[in-house]
Length: 226
Image: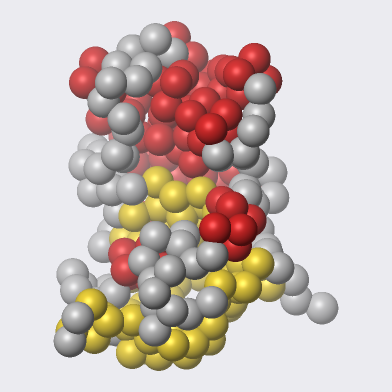
């Protein structure tokens, strides 16, 4: 029996009078690496944000590893806390807190949102930074990091509470070919550990080389699935 970790059913989302998602339905198997592709404005990023609980949707249903999200103006606090343990998100521009060091960025959510002790959060954070090759940058502020280093810190932050699903928005947008290959290796390693990856991207080559499945959006609708 197929183990579905992420399911979207007829998700509709609009901002004001502008429709963004017009009934998106898809399923993601546990341990998969799904690339969501489409032109700018197709709804890729908006869909990821809806899955992460960052943007309310008006109709349909999203379920992530047993946590079902309600459509409506805002998610209840308890539902949002449960979702945060299931999903981590890495934004296109990383969105690290500029006044915090790399390790403090990674520790923030575990300590303040999930009640993890500071020593335990730091221990986990240092393990993640080491796994991603940036442990030597633990005290650096975001402005002192290269683009690739900032991305790896952002991935560590997204995985700090060990969510089964990792979302990434345009992860190769500012990477040269060598760094793109390194990112592919890193993400494939996460998948081998059992993580499920859902990546919004314009990068056809990256999707072909690394994803297990490709979903294409056009004008807020799924137009191609495996």
